[in-house]
Length: 116
Ligand code: 5GP
Ligand code: ZN
Image 1 (cartoon, rainbow, N blue to C red):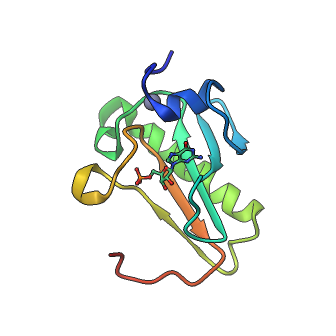
Image 2: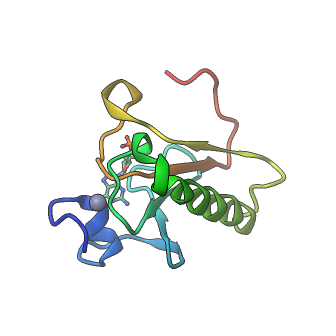
Image 3: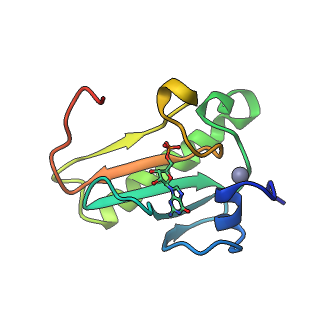
């Protein structure tokens, strides 16, 4: 069971609606509610981890689950030829606003670098 106060646990458990685009035993992916690119998806582990800072030790395989799901979904959305960006924000200065680990997949337009 996830954290009752966690937004993304709510989406994983279907208590909170979202446009889900991918599901597997480890990962759920859905459309970002405020898309920053034509394709903007979020990949979250079913298990509650607070952010990328927890992808250590026994949790390290979760990174593989998330990145594998994200790259396969990028291909399914036709982004592998044009390219795309995967982003993990950690903590305040990283711009993290939801305290459940998530990978952003952004694509469908040229993306500026460096980020703000
Ligand atoms: P962060 O800033 O923590 O890296 O990213 C959190 C992302 O979650 C933001 O891009 C934000 O638009 C998205 N988000 C926030 N609340 C919701 C929601 O209720 N549903 C969905 N689908 N996305 C959300
Ligand atoms: Zn959670």
